[in-house]
Length: 631
Ligand code: WT7
Image (cartoon, rainbow, N blue to C red; front, top):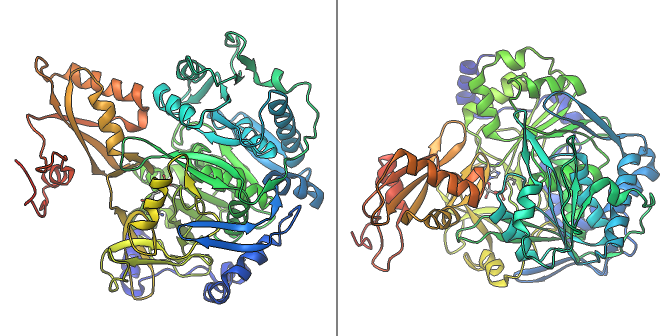
C-alpha cells in the first residue's frame, strides 16, 4: 500500500493489526491475559520469571516496598554474568554467535558465546589482579566494539560497578563522571571511528583524569597502527592487561540489591544524575522484556542500533539479549556512511529478524529516499522497534511500509534510563496505533494523571506516572538521595520522571514530550541548564537561555539566546567560537544549532529565566500566563 492509502486506512480503522501468524507464534499471545495474571498477584508473577534464572540462593521475599525505596528478591544471591554466559553455555550455546560486529567498511568480527565467555573472564581476572574489588567503580569510555560490552560484563563478574560514558562526551563531561563516581580504573580505546575518520579517545581520557589520584589505571584498547603511545605507569594496553589471565574467573556472589551500574543522565539542573541500578531486579526485568516485548526466539538475529553508552545499550544489548541467549548484530559508526544503504545492507547480510532503532534515524532515512532500502532484501525482518522519543505517524508508517513491508509489527517502546526496561508499548499481539506507544507492559501499572495524582479524562493531557514498583526501577541517584526522592514526591503516590501524555478510551498512551527543561535531540536527553552553564563559562557570555526547537529529523534542536558581556560584539566568528566551546565542555550532542544574541532575557521577578516565553516567541505560540514576568 502507498503511504497515502495507509493513512486513509488508519483514519477508518484507527489501528493496525499484527499479522495472524505473528500472534499465533508470539511469546505473549494474549496481552490482556498476561496483564491480568500480573495484576492478580504481582509478586507471584515476578517470582515465576526469576525462577527461570539461576540463583546461588533464592530470595526470602520478592518485594520490600518502603515508599519510595524498593528492594526486589530480598536475600537472593546471584551473578548476572553467570546467567548471561555460564548458564547459556551449559544449555548448549557455546558455539552460538553472540555478536556479529562490523565497522563502516564491512570488516567483521564474529564472537560466539564461548569466546565472549573467555574474553569476559580474562578481563575480570585482570581487573581483580589490578586491585578492583566488589563495589569499586570502573569507567568505560569506548567505541561500540565487542570489548566494550565484554568490559561491562567483566565488571559485573567481579561485582565492580560500571559507569559507561558515551564516547561522544568531551573531557570535562567525562571528568565530571569519573569524579562523581571516584573511579579506580578507566577502560578506553585509542579511537572511535565515525564517517571514516578516527576520533581520538585516549587523549580525552588523559585530559579528563589529570591530577585525579584515585584513578589508578587506564586500560587502552589500541586499534590503529602504529600503536598510540602509552604514557607513564598508569596506562596499559588492553590485550597486554589480559594476556596471562585464565579463561575462568570465579564470579562474585552478588546480593540481589548489590549495585550493578551507574549511568549518568541529564535532568533539569546543571549536574547530570548518576542513575543507580542493582543486580537481581534488573536481571529479571530485562530478561522478561527481552522475551516478551521483543518476542525473542532462539533462531532470531537481533539488532539494536543503540550504543552501550546509553540505557538502551545496557538493557537491550549488554544484558537483556545475552540473558536470553540471543544472537546480535552490532555496528560501529554512522548509519549512513559510506552511503544510506549501510543499515539495509547489514540487515540483508546477517538476515536480521528483529530490528530496534530510533525515530530520528528513521526520519533521516525517509529523507534519503526509499530507493536505498529497496535495493536490499529485507524479508528476514519480522519485528521492528522504536525508542528514544515520540515517533510521528508519518515516520511510523514509513517504517512499517518501507522497512517492514507491512508484515512486521512495530513496538514503540516508552521507557527511560531510570525505569531500566520498557514500560509501555504494544506487546506483540496488541493492535498498534501509529504515534501512540501503547499500554503498560505486564509488570507495570502506568497512568496519566493530574498534579494530585488523579487520572485525567481520556485524551486530555496529563503527567505520565507509574504507580507500583517494578524490578528494574533505579534504586537511587548516586550520592543524591534527595534527587531520587523527588521522582516519587512530585505527584502523590506516583513515580514521575517528567513526561506529559494522553490516554485514549482503549487505554493507549501517547507520549507528547517532556514537562521539564529537558531537550530531546535525536533521542538523547540534554538538560537546558547543562548547556546554559557551558555557555556562560565562555568569556564573552554574560547570560544564556536555551530552548528546544522542533526539527524534522532530530526531533528537537537546541537554540541558545545569549546576552554578551560588555566589550563583546556579535559576529559569525563569535558564534563559531561559542559553539566550539560547548563542544569542548559537553560534547557534540549538546552544541546549539542556532545562537541568537539578545539584549535581555525574560525573567521572573525572582530572577529565574522564563524559557517558556522564549520558546513561545520563537515558535509563534501563546506564551501563557505572564503575570510573573518582570520585563
Ligand atoms: C526519555 C527518556 C529509554 C531509552 C532511550 C532514552 C523519551 C523514550 C520514548 C517513546 C516517546 C520517548 C521520553 C523519556 N522517550 N522513549 N517511545 N516515545 N518518548 O532514554 O535518555 O533516559 O530518555 O526519552 O521523554 O522520558 P533516556
